Image (cartoon, rainbow, N blue to C red; front, side, top):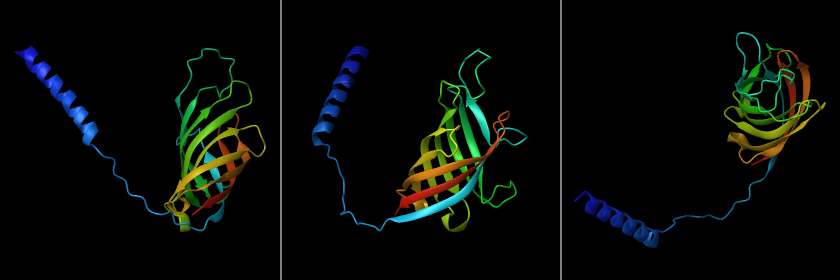
Length: 189
């Protein structure tokens, strides 16, 4: 009895899936594209990356299983989760304008530290409150002014693309703490 019920159920499922494919339709509605005037926006802010102290804003969430103690601290494969402050000035007490949340990965096998960033830079004050830009890019840390790719945005920066020129103002090689200046050029609607 159980076997015959299983066979009937099996054939019922086969029949259902074949008739669904035959009678199913894809629904979509398209509207003509309205060309919006593209805007260019320039942003300037400082990014505070803090690995040390009582309230770190960047933490290791995964690291390679390597027992070689001669490898540098920024080992290949180390993944960091961040919630870093974005401020108007270099001082830790300057106005907070947002945060950078996401991940970065140490991605170089040699001693030239390179990170790959997957970060949403969200703004929480002013005319860009509620908007953000997305950076997904390689960051060769040793270069004096790396250029990062802006690949998207939301809010006032919807459909953003552009670049960020960054400059390191402070880096503690022991702790990894740093302050980085961002000059961002965006094209968006």
